[in-house]
Amino acid sequence: MVNKKTISNTFFEGERPLFATNNIRLEHVKFYPGESAVKESNNVEAYKCEFMCKYPFWHNDNTLIEECLFTVYSRAAIWYSRNIRMINTVVDAPKMFRETDGLYLENVKLPNAAECCWNCRNIEFQHVEVKGGDYIFMNARNIKINDFCLQGNYSFQDAKNVVIRNARLDSKDAFWNTENVTVYDSTISGEYLGWHSKNLRLVNCTISGTQPLCYATDLVMENCKMTACADLCFEYSALQAEINSPVTSIKNPGKGSVTAHHIGEIIIDENCKNPGACDIKIIQQTVAV
Image 1: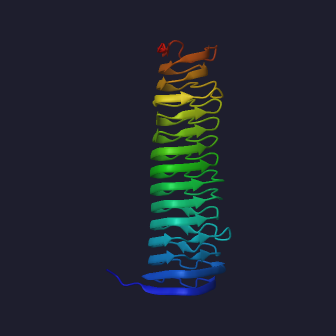
Image 2: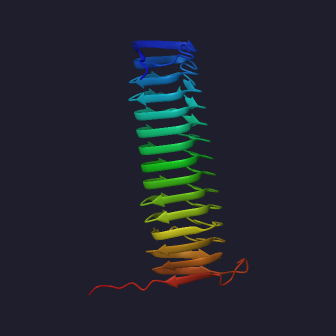
Image 3: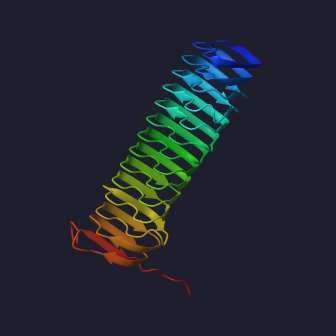
């Protein structure tokens, strides 16, 4: 085990104050305006530190961040790095993670998370809250998420190999052009969900928002519910859908099957590409008396 040098109860500012400094533990350290404070460093621990500088952790390996604050001035803080663990931390800065391989967040809040986690790989989130998270996880790979709250549009665009559990997603255009995404026990609100997705599987989920799940390939829905505003569903999609609620309307589905408790309107017009290729059934509900 490598012994770490402890730096505590001090501050740094300006350019590269701890550039290429390895095997250090930072305790109660403040980083005032400047750039690249701990860049090109390995085996760094930061505990109860405050970051007001740009780009503090770039090109780093094996970083542990606990009970820290990244202010709005610390934008683009962690890029091109590997094996990052962040616990009990607040991140007020946008563009937080990019091109990072091995990213673990636990009990973290990101209230200003625009353009976060682009092109990142091997990600795990536990009990994370995100606001303002437009375009979060764009082009990311190998993601595991549990107990997640997201407000931000265009989430997970072009992402692959994603498993999400117990989430509340308020996100327009979520899961566009994704591959191999499974969402369990979650609520997804926002129009145009999952367009052009491949192998999107929704299990025990509630869906809200107009025109969801169109142009999808191999879409699976198991024991899901759809609210009244989830209309004009499934246009040109190939799917197997089990919906335990009414559906307001279905329009020009591609192929496969849909079962639901009630369907307000089935629209098959002159633009339907495969008339009759999708089997649509109504589930007869049994009422106890």
